[in-house]
Every structure is written in C-alpha cells, then in structure tokens.
Image (cartoon, rainbow, N blue to C red; front, side, top):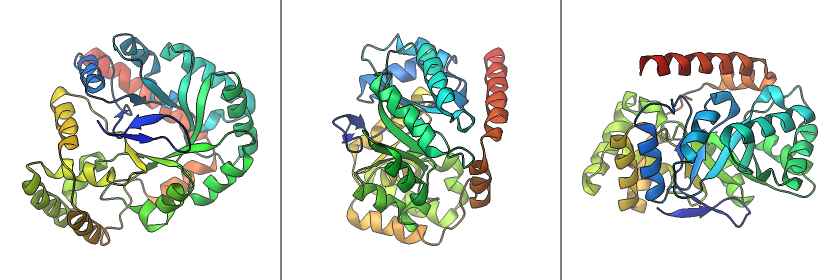
Length: 307
C-alpha cells in the first residue's frame, strides 16, 4: 500500500484508509475485513463520535497485530472548550487508546468561536491525548480562519467529500489551496456512495478505461481520487469482496491521458451529492448533530438485532 505524508507532519498514512460512516462493526465479517486491510498495508481507521461506533471499533482494534492510527472527530454541537475536552476523553475511553492520532472538527459551527475550539484542541495536543489537529467540511475561508487561530500547531487535514461525480474542491480551488498549504485532503465518499452509475456518460467512460487495466469503473473512480499526491481516501469497506476489490486498486496507475479524459467529463457534472444548500444549513449550528447521533445509534441497534 502506498503511503502519503499527513499534512505538514512526520507521519505517513496509507493512501487508502477505512471509513466507518454507516458501518456496523459487530457484523461478523467486519473484524476479518479490518485485519485483512491492515495486513495489506492500510494503517488508519476513520470514525467520529457522531457515528456511535467507537466502542465497537475499539474492541476490533485489540484483534489487530499492528497498532492502527486512529482518526476521529468531535461533533459540531460539542465545540465549546470544555465540551471538546470531554468529547475527546470519551472517545479515548471508547476506542481503548491512549492517544488519538488525528482529531478533527466534524463540521464548522458558526455559533461557536473557532478560537475557543482550537484552543481546546491545542490543550489536548499538549496533554498528548491527540497528536494532530484537523478539520472536516471546512471551505477555504473557514480553513484559513482556523489556521490563523492556532498558536503552536498546524491544521494537517481537511476531510471533504470528493469523488469523480463531485469535484467541487477542484473547481473551487480548495484542493490546490490545501496542497499549497501542506494540508492533506481526506476524501470521504470517494466512490460517490455507489451513485456514480447514475451518471451514465461518466460511468461508461470509467468502464472503458477500466478495461485497459482489467478493473471496474469503481476501481478507476477510486484511483482517480487518490491520483493526487495530497489526497487520501476513506471508502467504507464492509465485506471481504469489497476489501479485495479496493486493495486491487494498488496494482495499477492511471496514465495522465486517462486522468485527463476523466477530468474532461467531470466538468459537465455539477450535482453535489450532499447539496450546497444543505451544507450551509449544517454549518449554522450543531443542533442537527444530536438528531444524527440518535438516528445512527438506533440504526446500529437495529442492524445488530437483525444480524
């Protein structure tokens, strides 16, 4: 597995990590998937307190021969100073680790001063409870403000939605800004939540290119996302079949000509999967996070009972 330096740090992350949004960790196959991935070079797992799965993941970590890098996120309704520290301590306990490798602000909350939040994050670095500070779903203006608030540390990552069907960070210049600022982009939904097939012209082009490399359209799509040296991807991987498919992406590299072909056709796609209007609403305050946490907890409980 190829590795990439995490932002302006001395730590290298595998270019593909395990995303766990809507992943039910106690399904029988998940421990097998996690062990397989780590045996084949994956070295980090991404989660969040909002996902309601940190405790279950902590149990799985104890079965891994190699100690994983842990990436988790504080909810936007917990961004006051004391709440950040409390959330971090709870995540550490649930995950069963002494230090979180990368701790990120899940979404901006425009009702809470970002200086207060980042002051708490820097305190946690000083206490060695977290190693690096990151953000998620921050646009360039929000990212620049966060960068200016830090005194002794740097923002090393911005976790953003990025895939062949949603290239907003390319179009807005945010991808280049992150690259020039030595901030890694951690791409979530790198396979477009399986919706890439809905874009027929794009899907057909990906399939045509895939024939050359003996891979499928989704493998080409993932390879496109991580072709940038500054981008790390976190697909959700819930089965051994999917895990094998993902790992096979390391066996080929897209030519510049093929990358250009894909980039040309993505220019005609301007349909954000999450929606620009929804993003604005999510950033107003963190009240929606409480609803999401409850919904996710109930979903996991339902999934566990049906297993």
